[in-house]
Image (tube, rainbow, N blue to C red; front, side, top):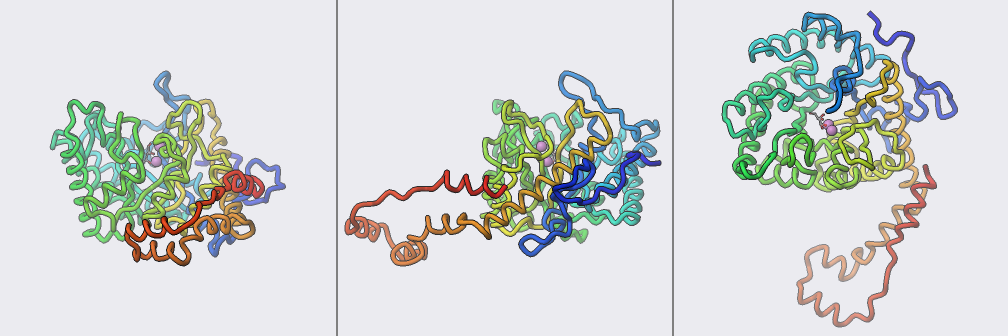
Amino acid sequence: MEYFKGIGKIKYEGKNSDNPFAFKYYDPEKIIAGKSLKEHFKFAVAYWHSFCGQGADPFGVGTQEFPWDAAKDPLQAAKNKADAAFEFLTKIGFEYFCFHDFDLIAEGQTLSESEKRVEKISDYIKEKQKETEKKLLWGTANCFTNPRYMNGAATNPDFKVVARAGAQVKIALDTTIKLGGENYVFWGGREGYISLLNTDMGRELDHMARFLTMARDYARSQGFKGTFFIEPKPMEPSKHQYDFDAATSIGFLKKYGLEDDFKLNIEVNHATLALHTFEHELAVAGCENMLGSIDANRGDYQNGWDTDQFPNNIQEVAVAMLVFLKYGGLQGGGVNFDAKLRRNSTDLEDLFHAHIGGADTFARGLIVADKILNDSNFSSTINKRYSSFDSGDGKKFENGNLSIEDLFQIAKNSKNIEKISGKTEFLENIINNYI
Ligand code: XLS
Ligand code: NI
Ligand code: NI
């Protein structure tokens, strides 16, 4: 059965095209900084938002009626959903998808029933992957929706729940490996607290580290060669989440010796919730050599919720792509559209407009950033700012060859300190001139 009727394969037609079902900037084969756009981005569709989320919000039920949800039998409904997902992937032309265990099929009443269900649907998906040559960017376990996780999963004060989360992660790891997953994600939605009054934070953090270590050891023992990603987010649904932002997550990984196997999956809207910019989070991960993957979306700059809108802010993405290029792109991951249609976007074709716009925004951002780095005074302006460290005492300082007494002598002997402009507006203009 064809779900997205009347829509064919989306092609790159260039910026002068007025075809709404064509890419204007995302030419998968275009080479930028030595790699094709397709290789830079490894665009992925998020199973949960695109094929599961029906648009419910705290004030109302879902507005979407997906034809693939109609079947009563859970396995049949899951197969129909997979058909729709792979039809969409084929038509949009992205190579990758990402999933949570229970995006693929509804959770069963018991653990063994759930295990059986996931096993059956992953057999089916494996076949679909063969037919369509689509790849799994990452898998993950949903350890936050079921009420049993209301006090957390790995950080739950009840060991029984921790064990249950472990069972779920084991199955999700097995499934990820079975489907050739290139990475595995941990987003700790309820790994945090609602109230500190009833929470032993230190103990919960130790538990989380123990849990992640066990998951890593198990996956490695099963031959998993990919990277594990922590996806930082400061809050929502918890009042406070332990993986607050990139800096906090890196500190955690290093404290517990997990930094060799884990990198970060940076999500745009999570950055804004943490009161950071997207590029800030990329830079924090990048300078630690931990920039693994991106969850692409956009927040609402007025209300500050995790609205997960599709990316369309070219300036925001262009500036982020300067950081992306500086650190040599993503380590193992890709750009996953962890974004959802607005609740009143109820046509099936809206999913195409959303992904086309998102891909074009990233492509345009990267092309702009690359031009800025190659053709403008952007890099030289920054290099000049730091040139006092390129030779003489500045160089000695960087190399660790000066003491605080040396600084004292140097300061005593030097004349007035002249003001040096930071050139902020000059640089801001360069960005806009290249867009
Ligand atoms: C929610 C997260 C979630 C993760 C995967 O805010 O973005 O979707 O990406 O569990
Ligand atoms: Ni995400
Ligand atoms: Ni999110």
